[in-house]
Amino acid sequence: MSSTAIKLKYEPIRSLAFGSIVAGYTAIGTALEKPAVIFSIQNLTDKQLMFSFDGANDHFTLSPNGVYNVDCNSNKSDRSGALYLPEGTIIYVKRIGIPASGSVYVTAAYQGV
Image (tube, rainbow, N blue to C red):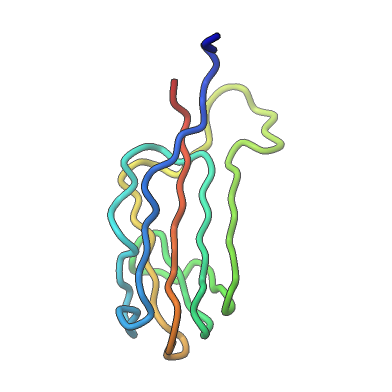
């Protein structure tokens, strides 16, 4: 039995190893291909890192082994439009401390049929 409901689909995971995280912002993989309704950013390195959605401004930090999860549609009460992280968005990272192990990861999910 098939469903006509909207499905949650995932883009391939994006990652950047600790040795590629430098003092200036570096892209974590490629731009989003679809508008993300759910996304997760994981700092699985051994140091605190800074993250940015535009590669120029500091937006948030994550401690070692920290996770930043966003569900754009949870508790949504406005039915007039969708809230999402736009396609083409690139997540950037830079070091605060110098990591010696691990990687950072971006997972993104979008609405599909």
